[in-house]
Structure formats: structure tokens, C-alpha cells
Image 1 (cartoon, rainbow, N blue to C red):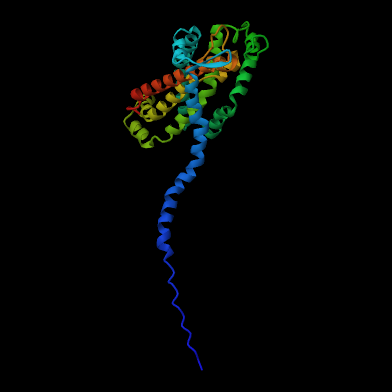
Image 2 (image 1 turned 90 degrees about the horizontal axis):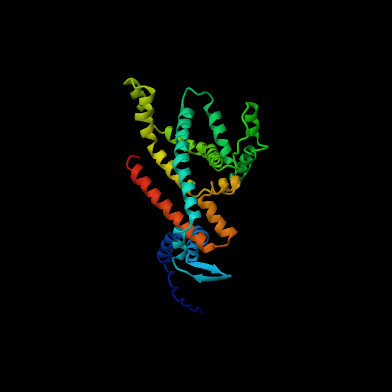
Length: 309
């Protein structure tokens, strides 16, 4: 005798594909943010937080080891601080005199290294750029040794032609000149590389058309090369302005801001207040005034040169 066994119908498995599609879409939307998250956290921790805390510090003053809220007193103090104005004047002199000379030399160097008349151009380009990899402290120490008044190589070479000892680092005027030479030697080649890269993007057809029209070298440079270089000139001008206003390593290594504060820059004065006098509130105020100055000058440069570039 056979018995029939009834089997209950099994439930049809749910279509998991349709249910997981929103999850997959959400995962795809979140993926970019997850990739960016580590960089954002690091940026917030090591950039945004220090900048914000520096502004808070600028509103306080340490008196006998106790931080006291003083509001804008640190900023008002800047207006009556003769050393701050001396540092600002020295920095402005470097900006107005050294930076244009450096950019003019960089332009001439870039044009020379881009000329077809120069053989082994790659070798010369490498040779001119290689010193840029030298650390700021290292080349500052080297120049301080070369320019030593009594034992320096420069004065020894000058003595061979009958020139007496030059106080490169101990006289205010010569110290400024030495700092300018140091900055020009190091940063000319950096700007030349940027200008050279831009030069190589100028269409050769423009030079060919100028040659057909009978334009000389001067007119070609003025009407073809310079207009093509304007974006790079704007970039190097802005970068050089920012770098000059923030300059610290070279004057500190070379002269410590002396003699008689002749090479005292805003960066050196900020360092002195923060890490020699431990007046972090005042140093933070100097930093924010410097940032404001950089922003204003950068905006002016973009207004003046930006449209043409």
C-alpha cells in the first residue's frame, strides 16, 4: 500500500538584485568621499587647525605664564613697533629691487636655453637647474663661508687683483647686497624653468610668420615671445612675491637679520618673537598681517597682469 506524501511548496527566493541595487548606488556615491577622507582629515589636522588656532593666539598675550585675552591689542601694537616697520621696509626693498632683476635674468636665461643656437641644451638646462635641489640651509651656510670677511674665498680672489677686504656680512649695505646676490643666484634658475616650459608651448609658426615679415630679433621678442610668456610671467611674479614676503631661511642663516637689523625680514622678526621671546600671540598677529599683505598684493597682480595673461 503506497502513501502519498504532500510536499509544501517552497517560497520563491526574493530577487536580491533589485534590493541591493540602492545599496550599490549608495556605495558608489560614498566611495569618492571615503578616498578623500584621509587627505581631508590630515589637511584639517595639520592645516586648518593650526591656522585657526593661530588666530586665537593672536587675541591673547602671555603675562607671567598666564594667557590673557587682549583682543586686537597685538594688532594695534604692530602700528607702533619700529622693528616691525624696519622688517617690512627691508622686505619691500627686496621685493621691489631683487625680484624684478631676478625675473629679468630668468627670462633671458630661459630664452637662451630655448635657442637653437645653443648646442647640448639639455646638458645646460640640467646644469643650471641642479643647484635648486640644494637645501636652503646648506647653500646659505656655503655662501656665509664664501663671503666671510677674513677667510672667505670671494675676498681672497678679490685680493689677487688688489681689492681689499669687503665686509660682505658685517656692513649693512654690503649685507643687503649679499642677500640679494644669494636670492638671485638660487631662485633665478627656478623661475627660468617655468618660463622655459612656457616658451616651448609658443607655436613655431608665429616665429616663422615674423621672420617672413622681416621682423628683427628685438621685435620678435617684444611681439611674439613676451606675449606668449605673459601667463608664466604672472605665475612667477606671484610666486616670487609670496616667497619674498615669507623669506626666512636665507637672512637667518646668512646674517641672523643683522647687522643693525639691515637684513631683518618679516619672517625673521616673526621667528624671533615666537621662538626667542616666546610671544606667540604677537607672532601670530604678525603672521596674519603678513597673510593679508600677501593676499592684497596677489590680488593687485592678478588685476594688473591677469587680463593680459
